[in-house]
Length: 100
Image (spheres, rainbow, N blue to C red):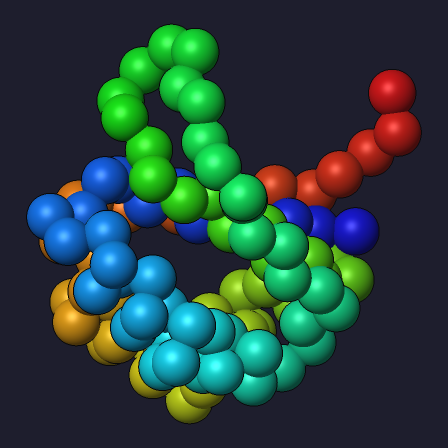
């Protein structure tokens, strides 16, 4: 399995962020080809590093599926939408998972 983590910094207007994310952005994300699951943080406690507001985990079958999803029309639409609500900054991390 491969994971895409999206880490959102604290927005200037959390209520507007939440509204836009739920009504506009999440429906775009759910259309990503190959997406197997989406998990949203209920709250974020940062133990080290920059303040975060929300962490979103997207699950895909493979790293290649992550790349294909990001380069798809749906992925480009979701990326373009970030400027509409993510004013607190964003970090995106992709990785393959292996059992330890």
